[in-house]
Length: 302
Image 1 (cartoon, one colour):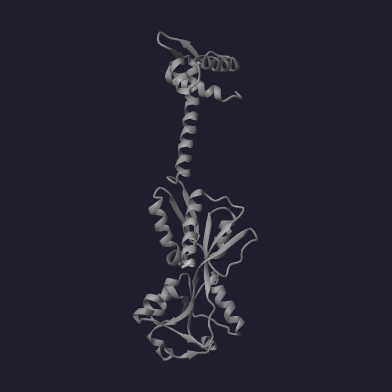
Image 2 (image 1 turned 180 degrees about the vertical axis):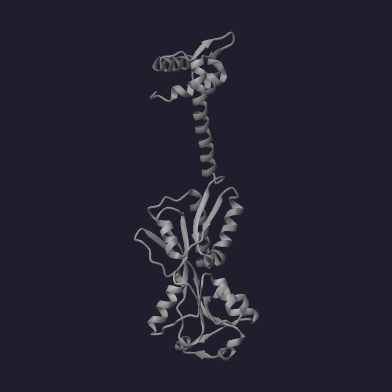
């Protein structure tokens, strides 16, 4: 194989122009330099690539064959450069995020809107999965970063930044109005029909651990895949739903649901942005994180 790829560049320009003089001008080198490069290429390949014509030069049959491949290769390189410049200029690229319905709806969505307005050419891919699977996806390089709720167990090479406080509550509808405006003991949960998320979520893990620490053992009547479904079950008086307050807030404010009060405070949790130090992050992803962190910094200063 020809070791000096510059010869192929000169060959490409000379073949396209059909003139050594024009090729030299386009390459910003002298005509003798063009002639010398083509001679070196022909000597190393052992064939004549051009012949003299009445006007300029023409490709030989061997030259025609070589040019069909060199042209495709060179034009792909040029395309690659253009695409790279678009990416560096944030006109092209993609961001891959791991997020749950909850973190997407109640935290990430406004930032995605801001990002899209600023960089409309960037594709955003959101992978929805439980927190443990999201962390594995980050570890495997399938996503650029994750937005998850605590608690979360992270490998040593990952970093979590708390970005928003969240509150777990128990909500109920009119069937349970006897508990409204009363302060209950947490032990009362053992006798209530409960609606919880499935076990493979950080929210369920957190609440199970908290209640077990209080020597309270629950057996929910319903275990559902999404928080939205918990709200719907509670609205239909099927039980007392355990949920992050943001999901039920509109229904609490309208009076369709109410929040149960207890004599012990359920510690609040956080949404976190999780990044992996070993995983390369796209420029687009870094720009999105910068928007998130800048807003966090401004709100903190306020």
